[in-house]
Image 1 (cartoon, helix red, strand yellow):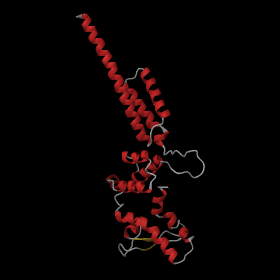
Image 2: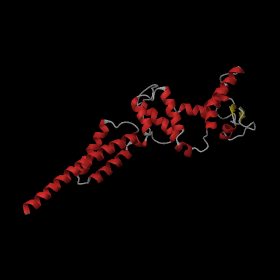
Image 3: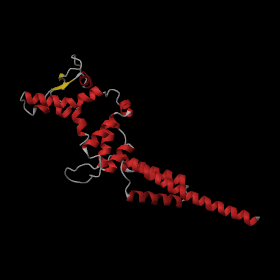
Image 4: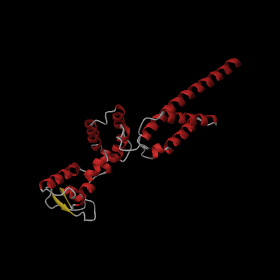
Length: 237
């Protein structure tokens, strides 16, 4: 009876140790997954190795699996890779193309003011995000997201269309009038509809009709430096 009692205790302890190992393994995998989301790219082997080393130290210090994982999460959230918009080009000279993950982050922070979602990261991982058709498809998907609508309630389809039509109308006008190219940098004129005029802080009495808009001031940058369409395209470069 006594032997059986202690055997059951030993079996219980062994089972607990095995379950603890399983729980710890799953917790580390979850931390790795979370770190990938936080860093907006796959975790480097060196980074994961550092997390494993920290976990080992915390466990050897007598902390439970839960407490050790809490320490790992703090390490992830204190990492410069989470706190700053680092790119794979840091330290490189000259003009270099963004890689897929850098492009996904830039696109997401521009449109959502947040980290890329699983769909965007999957596109980056597949290498398709550099393709123009895939990039445009992702932009359209993200623009339709209700989060974006909540964050920017005034950003309507009409305004979005006007933003990207503005430089086209303006460039066409300058070509037709044979105006100096430098006027694109200093001109006080641009083409807007009512929605875009309101966005710039003015009004256009002709309703939705496209027309001139004056009001930038000669001391402010010209339309191709200032208008939001150029800013939107810059964010994708």
